[in-house]
Image 1: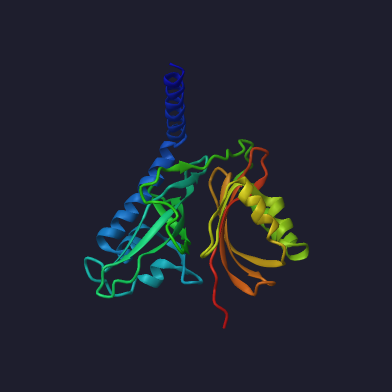
Image 2: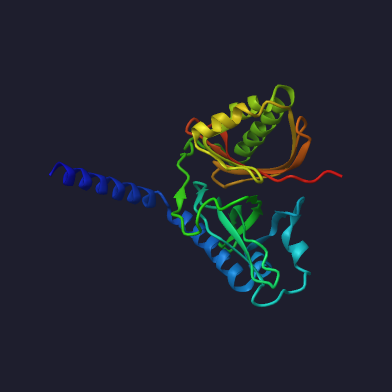
Length: 294
């Protein structure tokens, strides 16, 4: 009897957790998720070029490896074969959205399968896309930067999880909020340049942040983040190239270049900033690439 009661309580607990998770996915976030899934379906059906040109904003940026306007870069390319010999598929499993519902991000596993005669091995990684509502109320990708991994991080049918961190409701006017976000970014780079990267990350990284680096296991969870921060002992410099902010002023992003001087590594980053409960700007997502030198 005790065993049956324990199993019943466990079942109810699991059901409640699943319900709570789904209840935290707002209708606005659901629309962003469905846009991401539609983007992926079109990639499988029509190919990468057709799907990216359809779902990217006119000013949307991807990295080649430098930040590049995708439509200007890809618009004149020859149309590939149909069906595409190389298939890129992906699925969102985590993301967040601003209070105003006009800016958000999405991430999850991607898979590249080669159906050409060469049959190259399947590639895996994690995509990261920032989405923004357009004038016609449609979602479009404004920034896209993923990382390739040595193996599969998660299956494409993994359950979606919304970001858990809540934003402050003590919001500033948009221009003031943007100025504060840029100030936070500048203070991060100042600390990283004059003290150490460890100090910069310790002061600004959210406890529920995610860190993506090429070919490295994603850093997720408070304990993993603390271990990762302690390893950032060298000097790092960076320069912000672009920034944008949601209408509500609680979620924004920056794009820039960086250099890890001790490791002789340089590249570009995309960083999501979010106001925490105490109205302090925190880094909640950070992904980089590496640009070969020379």
